[in-house]
Image 1 (cartoon, rainbow, N blue to C red):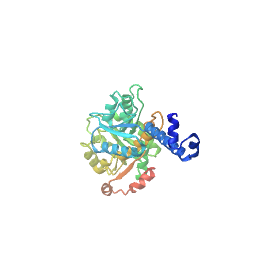
Image 2: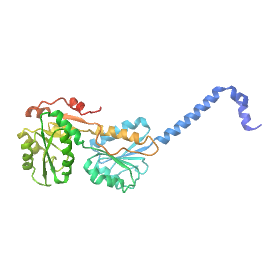
Image 3: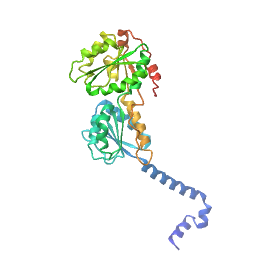
Image 4: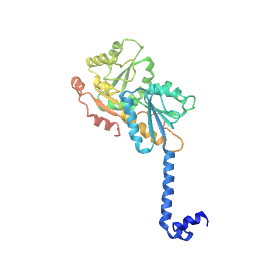
Length: 326
């Protein structure tokens, strides 16, 4: 007797018995289906290498949010630091958190697509994109740390309905910012009052020229203008002219800006996780085009508001007016 027939007889699975015992067929089908699904899910799961510029809190927060959002997707987020990046060769997608991480990833031999987050738009457009693409050998995208000018102009219009002129102080390295900012302000019925300064030039005289004409001072992320050495002096000068400062980070609000528009590391991490899941949902990794943050917040310094005599709508009202999504 063939072995196969002996096994069938032992378990009552003759040719006739096999058809007579439908639960056996159902069990076999369930096992096969389970094995197929397990193989399918395993094929879809991917390793995402997350390279952090360093171990500081903002970068860590971005990673923790990404990992939390990917937990139920089957994808593994593997962290490392720019000083010693790891698992790049095994990754299906690399996320670089911060400029330093992006520079290190750009210099690596990895050919995996790269998503750079918490990076300034100016840096990405001037040098970052070319560095990361390596002459087209990698596909890249980014979520910028800065806010779109249209959103900033809309915030000024909502918070200061009587304002007409917005002052901006930039170094000549960032003068191109003014060309993009001016039409955004104009669409919000606001006029730009600009000042361009040379790197290392004293800021107070050009700042005072701007403040004499402007109703609001908009701080833009030019590190040679607003930094830890200059911020206090710039805020005090703006107070003397009774001009509120609109900043670009929560730390600037704490330091003396009346209000700021910004995206937290957690909000950037949430958007990055959404992009990652979408990019890994098909066969090829397809990242969206580089973009400004989708999620954002408004912070207000009430003490500065009282000192300057401004009463602003609550932060959540301003956010709703800007179309914030929670």
